[in-house]
Image 1 (cartoon, one colour):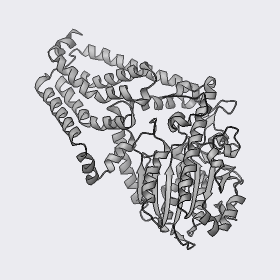
Image 2 (cartoon, one colour):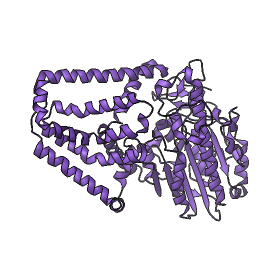
Image 3 (cartoon, rainbow, N blue to C red):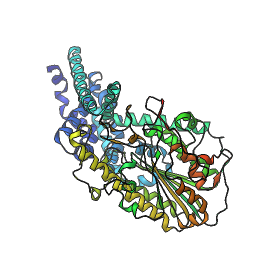
Length: 564
């Protein structure tokens, strides 16, 4: 300790000042971050961890070199601080991807509006590097090798304790013990994605890798075509909406018979069809989306790698296509599709933010509607009931109580809190009801030939079985992982033009169906044909054949029969 004090005593005031500048994003997050709300202990642990990560290079670098190294993150800090200011969360993949995707004209327009702030930032940068070069001696903080080893061992034990804590939390919720260590490691490592500068390093690398991945996949599929065409000439405008929900289970929609009034607005919406026996073919978002959007299925999952999606088929048939989402910006599969649309809009707010509500997607929808185009497909990818459920709805939708508040986590998922857990989930469904009903209202007000299809990527477990399975993506699966809502609405003009399809949609609403029907059905509903169209898989067709056995693709990448 004496050698440490000896080396830093003369530069102490400058070291403290520079350290505060480097840690400014972390300090700011502690003061305003939504994820750190609800307790002083969380903030203390976050700040201690941030300081320890900040200090690790000091064990190997001389003082001036140490601060020059951290100067990289001082230069990047305004990006982190801007995101915290906007969403009260550390930087997100979507935000950084948006920066990467911004062209020079857009960038200059934004920068010109914050000239004073930019000047202040520039002055701060100059001051930082001036002090580092002129005031900090280039000597080791700690000269003793033994002292360094002791500190490294201490750091190792500190992080081991952190891992042990999350291992204990995950152990309470995970039913399959073989995945316990892997899941605990995943949850523990996720915490480092929220500590600056770890977050910007990890997410920056992911963005770079993702952009290369997207470019590679798009080039491979460049010449692929469904040869899709419109099989029916329809006068006037046509508009189709496809809405992908998140973690919505069929059983908790009161429109489907649930005894809690979670969907009052949908129940009052005319010409709505709710399907009773529709199942997703995966219980994990990244696995289920390819099975919804392409001709891939659980038994032929690899197909999405060499075929495009129904969004591309709409584009081939002459439709303008748009992708509006507040999640999955980091998915190369999704970005592969969205990059080829006429407009992609991803939220720059992290999915774990407390105020990233689905209704914000309407801002970009209104921009699309203002273009007044004749044939349009809009795909919404919503956050729906993504964990944490209470972050998915504004305060006025906290109707079912008692419910969770603030940044509740795995430690609160227990049988003792079952009522709170289910009530909070039901509140998120109530908000989904609001979002869907008002999106339909917007579409109906256009008075055009239109239809809306809503389904969810997968379901959720809410302590329904004797094993008390909770959440999703477990090895032990239940029907609640897969039984999801499928809701279809059609406009007056659509019903007049497509009377036969309307009759078929009603006739097929209780048949055994799965996400592998979506591709064929939505194209059939829009009167888009292609050489390999299979009307036996379209729920808008009189030739529909229901599934005799339904399969799912599990997290072990195996095909299994869906439990019913």
